[in-house]
Image 1 (tube, protein in one colour):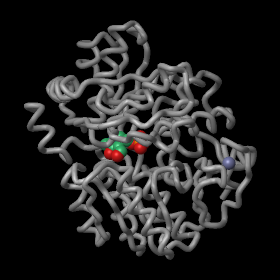
Image 2: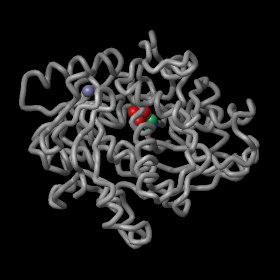
Image 3: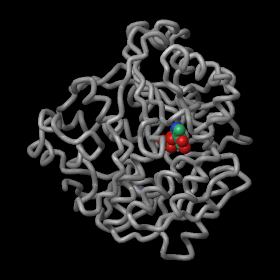
Image 4: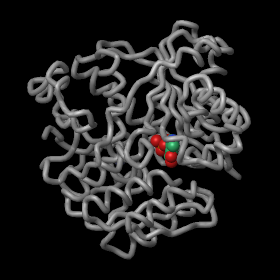
Length: 390
Ligand SMILES: Cc1ncc(COP(=O)(O)O)c(C=O)c1O
Ligand SMILES: [Zn+2]
């Protein structure tokens, strides 16, 4: 394994990667760092080609030392589909959708859970806890069960019903909260303070991010080790966006993708858009969004802990942040299904609304190669799909 240490992106402190660790003492999330020179000497892109069709094909760039601790249900290596008919309808010649609905538990959260649970187990955790908007809790409870760990998951009453049931079905302890993810976080802080439980909340441990960054590796590998012009991502806690940005930087340092930088786009809902508001003001920190609500429940995060990392990724890549309307999300969910035969999750549909709006404003050109992340399976949201009339 090539993991060397954990680094604080805010204060520069270096932390041991071989102990269970949460935030830096300065309050920032920590990032896993690898000996990339040694990785470059050990493996080439061509050597990856024959490996298994899951995220563990990138094992040199993942934090699990001993394969015996790998907790897997076959996550990753999802298809990157061209969406020519919907693309033509909105004026994009090269629109691609990466379908994370095919991952175990029906969302990209399984990537973070697979790597996060594996590493937590390797470092001695026996019980993990987290607040969630639904899908992450479902995935972590599932992978915890697979790895023989206990889980305690707190989620808002408004989270998709199936994600509650997934937690219970996996033997997790479910706490329902009449509030939003921040309220769930307060309850989990009490559980963690009581001892014996590892806090696996969004960006509170460094390895969920490592699982999610593999979306970025896959996009590049599936394009033949090159980058698209733009990547559009539905941003709640922002782990996927931060992860993709980290992946692209690592691949650039390895010399595997050249120097071109894709513009990263964070998509939020007009009902909860703290990142968009900060981006438009040119700031690096968000102010909490009051009275947050949207049909795209996964991106209802009023005050993401990783705000600096999200905003830095947008500024560094010449990207954008855009808020979209619930009614338009539902209309695009329906239009995309009819044009392409893929039932999106509402968060994925929000990204297609964003693509449409960015094309009409001219921010996207007609021949830009645009990759959209559909972060979950539409069939996890029967009520949303019904209200979209799909
Ligand atoms: C389907 C879906 N998409 C996107 C997100 C947002 O994820 P992130 O924390 O990476 O911004 C979530 C989070 O719950 C989700 O469930
Ligand atoms: Zn720090």
